[in-house]
Length: 149
Image (cartoon, rainbow, N blue to C red):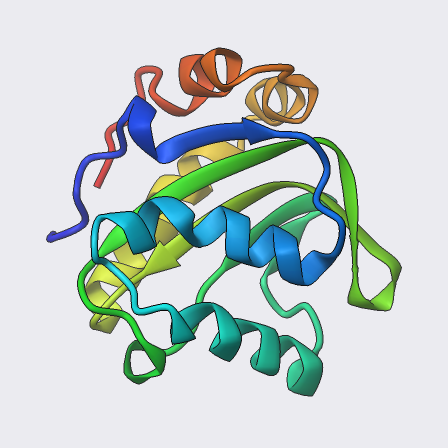
């Protein structure tokens, strides 16, 4: 798989975003900074949300934002952003934790989904993720003994 290893530099903890659109933009910053996505990738995800709703909310308060490769993905990547308070997404869906993904093909998309499936299938890990109060606490859970794609 070509997804770069998730590192502490990819994991952030922020005050609550002003809007769900800001939450999307802030969550994509690590991927933009390393060139895994073009700036229009955020606009595409926002437009997709307006068109299809928040299709990327996996669990209560946890989202996996992503778009199609042709919408601005440049390479594979994964980033994690926790917010100190939930951000209200469309359809009254509060989100506290955002995984941001770029993938160039379905194989890499599936490798991220497999990682998230392992991470989020453990109720204790999910509780720790949602109660994290710092980037360090998020790192401790996200970078634990799970293999990263």
